[in-house]
Image (cartoon, rainbow, N blue to C red):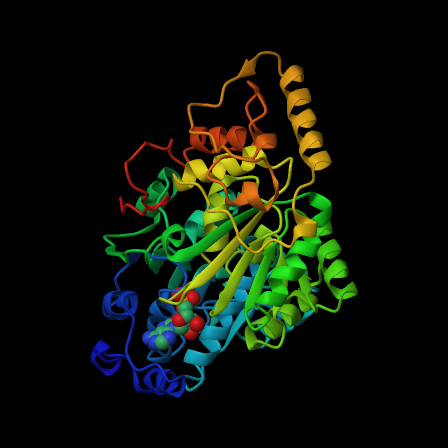
Length: 481
Ligand code: AMP
């Protein structure tokens, strides 16, 4: 299959050839022809499948092939171009929106169409200046888009094509009400392309409301990250995590590495500690300016920056290929996030490595993750002796767990899971099949924060209760409605 055979117009074809793409990906083969023909699309596919081109190419093809209709109300405000926009793409994060706009610019460079990206957290003036010049395609996150609409800079009444990308992430991030407000402003007569990696109930019902007789496309996810990524786990005291991190970074110095921390403050602290010992790293999180985030990301993409420290929200939607390793400096609060994090390495058939640090107080988070994986994460084998849990660390952890237990009232058992035996803590314990002693302390009946979050997600229909299959399967399959 070639791009020529998909029937795309010459200027787009030339741009694709300039990029060196020789064959379309599966989602491009399935979506481009019907989208070019004007059909609505419901695509169930993840990032990394080539889905941006699957919607950007048909948009450029269709808009470049049609002259812009004369303005319905040409005498509004002097040089008002707010209603020039003919295609709108909504994305949940600013990083993803910027990447999509970048794709429009690359695929559309011979088309004469203008695109721009709109997101919050930055001065709006450069965005409004762009809009006033007349823009064909807007890629936006919902909040700033609504803001600029309310200020009269954007008028959606002449939108011909609308894309809702990563709809499930929109839901996760609480953007669905804003998305619905935006959709209500679009003309009824339009083409809609909707993409989502998973299909929770809310997203399935939204798809039924906004799509007309859509072509349904399901691209099977690549082998689940939990299967294709080589994972390992180290039990380590919080204070010695930086030393272990430095050791692992040095032993894979040529790899690009994303290090996940739980908090923005934690991300900054890790950067400082690494820099103090001569390892260059930069952090991306919500408190960094957009330009600082973009600079770090560009350096990381080009390979000039090897170590990126990120919080989960900041890392969402980042498309960087060739990440050699992911390190969970802190375990995630929500177990499913672990799978998303480790999925950033080992893409496109490449091998990847994911290493997790479990501090003495993170035992319950680890248990929740291993429940999602339905397997134990193997113990790492490269722990410098100085970072092995000391007896005092283990005692502190046991005390903390017992205190939690007594605060929570009745004690609970081990939950029927096989215990890890052998010497507690240390390298020996890490290599043992048994859980370290500090994690075998009696636990309180009080549910963990992670399980409360999981229960809340189940109540809201964002996730399903875990069945107990005999093998690991993808935790978030997309079942088209
Ligand atoms: P996406 O899923 O849209 O984020 O795309 C993932 C990556 O694949 C991006 O880096 C694209 O530039 C790249 N890509 C998209 N389509 C093709 C193609 N047909 N051939 C090679 N690379 C592609």
